[in-house]
Image 1: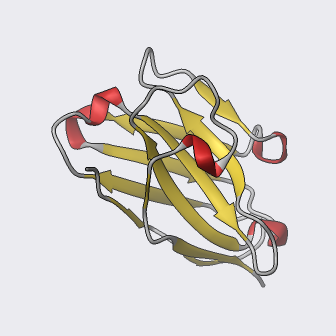
Image 2 (image 1 turned 90 degrees about the vertical axis):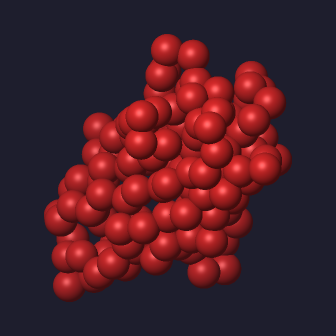
Amino acid sequence: QVQVVESGGGLVQPGGSLRLSCAASGHTFSRYNMGWFRQAPGKEREFVATVRRNGGSTYYADFVKGRFTISRDNAKNTVYLQMDDLKSEDTAVYYCAADQSDRIWYRTPRDYDYWGQGTQVTVSS
C-alpha cells in the first residue's frame, strides 16, 4: 500500500509558475512509476506527465510540452511537477498517482494503482 500526498497548489496569474510536490510513503518508492493527472470541472481526468522508475524517463501530454517538467527524488520519496508559463486552461485539480505494476501504458487513470486527494491550481488574473 502506498499513500501519496500532493502539495503546492494555489492561485497564480497567467504566465506565472508553480511547483507541485507529491510525497509518497513506503520504502519502495524507486520501484514505482509516478504520474500527474488533472481534472477541470465538468471534464474527465487527463494525463499530464509521467516519470518512469527505470532510468527516470519522462513523457508529457502535448499541451504541456515545453512548459511543465516532471522529476523525482527517490531519496526523498517525492515527485515534482514544475509548471511554467501557466495558462487559464491549466486551471484544474492536479492529482499524483503511483503505478506499482510497471505497466507499459501510462496515459489513462487505470494505469495507476494509488492516488492522492489532489491539489487545486487556479490560473487567473
